[in-house]
Image: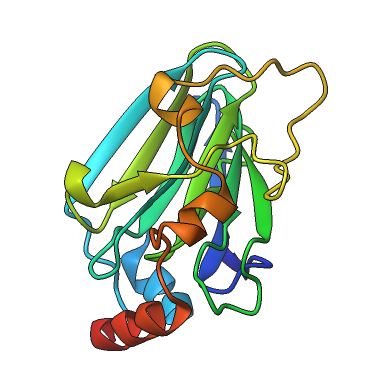
Length: 198
């Protein structure tokens, strides 16, 4: 298993070793011990989510209040998606920037993003199934969003994709509006929270 830091601190791309034979393929899709070496603590998975999306579906940009927020480990069980990690931590050196990883059933990569980071993805195929391992249970009172088509964030979708958004994501504020409303987590608070997890 290879774990590579993304351009956004506290986010990682995970590429598993695959063992194909005449029957199919076997792989370890998650290794808490190896992830802990990169992250600095072992993420405690308390909730698993699965979403099934049609081509063009955009989910996100989502984030939660810190603490405790919700770290995520995301992979594609079927289909393909472009997974985005957006730095929404006010005061971070990469605030407002993003990185992306293709998640599919060829390389079977995963993305880990720490608490306080924003998450979004766009499905590239019908019936794309994503699985999220989460370190905190969903709490709607503490969940927030940024409009995924906000020009200031500037997520780049593959050619030929017509974004399909939920009403909730369609009505989400821009990054500037969320900043003005005090919705975004602070980098200092996130660093303090990460320190409690080690």
